[in-house]
Image 1 (cartoon, rainbow, N blue to C red):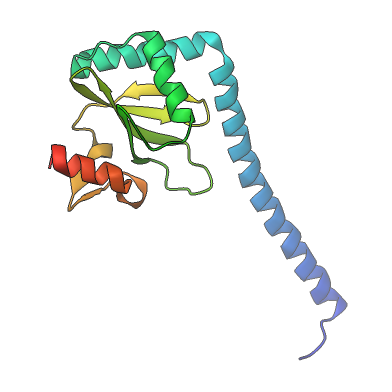
Image 2 (image 1 turned 90 degrees about the horizontal axis):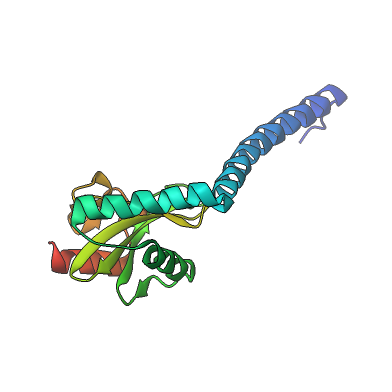
Length: 164
C-alpha cells in the first residue's frame, strides 16, 4: 500500500468535511421540524384546534361521539407506549424512516364504534380520525400496505378477524 501525498490527504479531509456538513444539515432540518411540532403541541390554541378537528371527523366519518376530555385521555394512554390496551390498539407506524417515527395509526373503540386515529408523536396529540377506506388502512394478503412492516402483529390479527 502506497502512502498518500499531502494533496491526497487534504482532498480526503475536505471530502470528509463536506460529507459531514451534508449529514449535519439533514439532521438539523429534521430536528428543526421536530422542534416546530413540539412548539405547536405546546400552543394551547393549536392543540385545541387539532382535538376539535379529530372530534368533528370522528362524528362525520363514523358517527362516534367523542368529547375533548375523552380524546385527551386517549392521548395519555397512547403516550404510555403500550400497543394493546382495552379499547385501544396500535395498527402501525406511518413513517418509513426508522429514526423519525412521526405518526402512528391506532384503532380506538367508542361505544360500539371503531375509529382509526392518527397520533403525531412529535406533537403528542391525536391529529385526525381516518375513514375506514383510507389508503393507510389498505389490507392486502394479511398486511397493511401503507404502514411500516405491514403493521403490528396484533393489528393485523385483529383486522383480519374483524374486517377480513
